[in-house]
Amino acid sequence: MKQARIKITLALLALTGVLMAQTFESRGIAYRIDGENAIVVSKAEKYGGEITIPAEVRHGGKCYRVTEIGERAFAGCRKLMSVIATGNSLLKVGNAAFSGCMFLECVVLPQSVTTIGDDAFHMTNVATIQLPSSLTSLGKRAFYFSALTEINLPPSLTTVDQRTFAGCNSLVRVRIPATTTQIADDAFYNCPNLKNILVDPANPVYVPSTNGSLKRK
Image 1 (cartoon, rainbow, N blue to C red):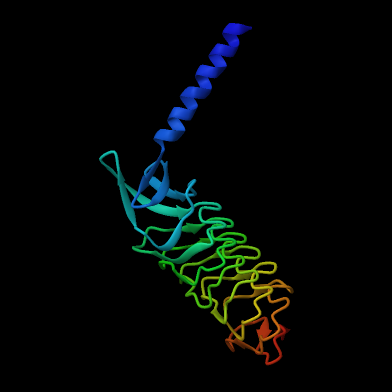
Image 2 (cartoon, rainbow, N blue to C red):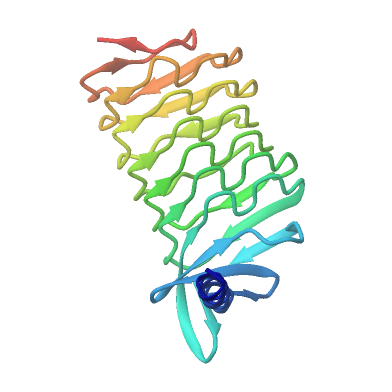
């Protein structure tokens, strides 16, 4: 029994060593190695101020493409004010990546991003953001209770999920392209100042609205 415990302990130590070797920090940002790529992860010291996420990062003499902002990577970082992702390697913003970043005002994402996860920008102070032209997946409650004032859905986005923009008190205008044909009934729930929903005339499902409610043809 004692030998078995020793073996388990050694195995756990070895696994811990591997995980530590796969995680590193560069210019104040923590990353986890994932094959040939790097994923931004959270760290013990909370992020703050202005952060630039590069397209590539070097570690151990090797260059890794930064392809993802991991799940809860910046969650709860109340001192974080600005995040700019450069280049065109970033593909995904993970679930709750920026949730609770109450003073986050500026977010710049590259056009390469295809996925923004559930609760990604929940309870942030982001008033404006350009959604990437390659975006195909926008998660539930992605901008729930954020400070958005206007949003333009990209043509690449066909579906808007449950409560994606719910609780956005400052939201006044939404633009829907012809290709966005599936929008959850509560996607804009409790947006009291939303008056103008502008819809491309070629959209086969929705029509423009001036009272903040989605209207179908």
